[in-house]
Image (cartoon, rainbow, N blue to C red):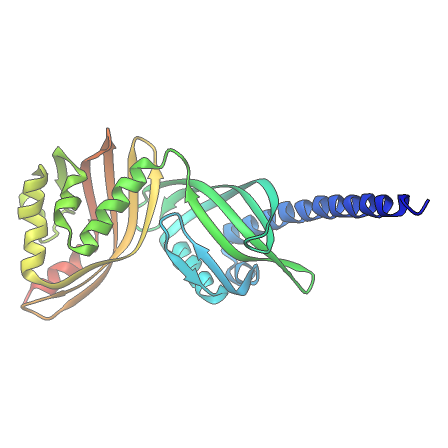
Amino acid sequence: MKKSLPLAAMLGCTMLLQAQSINDEADMHTFARHFMAAYNMGDLAAIQKMYTDDAIRIDAHGKEIKGAANIADYFANQFRLNNATLLLKQTGLHWSDAEHAWVAKGTYEVYGKTNVYDIKINLAGQYANAMSKQNGEWKIAKSVLSPLADGENVAIVDGLYKAFAKGDIPNALAAMDAYIVWNEAENFPYSDKNPYIGPEAVLNGVFARIGEEWEYWNLTDIQLHDVSGNMVLSTLRYKAKHKKTGKVIDSQTAHLFTLKDGKIVAFQQFTDTKQAAEAVRK
């Protein structure tokens, strides 16, 4: 009889853990539904409460945001730029010794249009949320996003931006097809030679002129969206200062890339051309 007590205790503990796991999984499904509802209603206060104060969010391109307030600010910027709908599908829940937390995994899809240029958005990927229970409420302590397996086009465009940011122009040009068709936005200072055909034309007609005429030209707040038809849409901001006039720009911008066989074959810029035109004018 005494020997059976440890076994009974073990079975009891196992059953308790299984019941707890089932309850937690149900809670995670409910949490995902509440997060979707808050996102789709643009309820920033509710979204912020769903993260721990010291939460970390890492997007599919490795960009890290720390703190619930900063994460809420990120979503506020997204709501301003995009009119999109979020769809979450939770696919699993497991205990992580590394995170010391339950980790809810699943897929996400964001679809809709940009508020700026009315361009379609179709962004999809995977998420893994390390969850923490505080005062009886589940919160996200760490959220890691990753692209789906077919995100090669996004990775290519991301590589171009990273090369450009480092001043690594050869690698930026290497992402382009030999016969790329590159168009600057109409009335933009460098649209005078549209279309630029081939990487060398882009180098001489756009990149070199930017380097010569601007004290700095930074691309910030870059968000990449995988859209249909082998296209990648990038929403971002230009922040730059003109050498001769000393004027600065801070303009909403979008880039639309078309890719084929691992190379960028077409590019179209959309931006606030008025700011750029006024910046170069003495």
